[in-house]
Length: 248
Ligand SMILES: [Zn+2]
Ligand SMILES: [Zn+2]
Figure 1 (tube, rainbow, N blue to C red):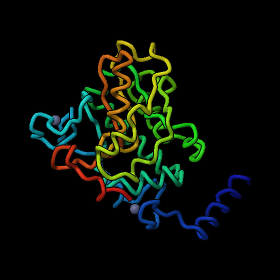
Figure 2: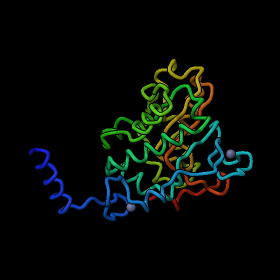
Figure 3: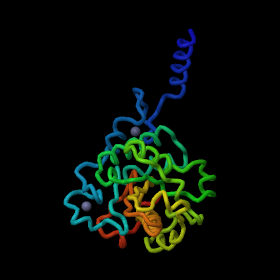
Figure 4: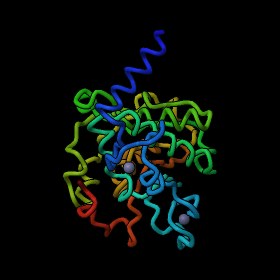
């Protein structure tokens, strides 16, 4: 009886608020997270270099920013940015889970991710984390660690400065300056002598993740790679790439 009541009330609620795709608002016909068209658009990248994620041939990973050993991205930024931002600032849970599953699957198939000893999220400053209620990258890192069967070392890394949001700063040089010295390794034993995989929601110019990677290497890590849901894959070197056209 109670089951029936629940089914009736769900049908009633579906009639009043029909389930819609969180990206394009089209009605959803079955119990899916996104509509078929958005799922196709967000399909993980195929035939990409395992190390830099660029289409093959990637010209010896020329676009890989130092000091990263590998940059692993599940999809292109232009396709995913609305979803990522919906999740970041609107805390849309079904979208978050979709992105986490996509990144975890990409990492599971990548040899650089598989060879990592520990996984860690790019930390938010505690003030910023309080504003948002949670750090999306923590959840993504947890999904990647679970998929790879590797330990999480997110609490070993901290952001000591609440820097202005990178999306408000256009040039990569300014972004680099904005995050220089912003990170600290609180627990060096968690990363010392290890290969670390840093996880962020998006990597645009790579300034943030590279600044963190440098700090982690200085604290004794063997090598650092990065994984993100999305990256814009600029056609020129990262140093000359203008993030202005990508920011929302
Ligand atoms: Zn859709
Ligand atoms: Zn490559």
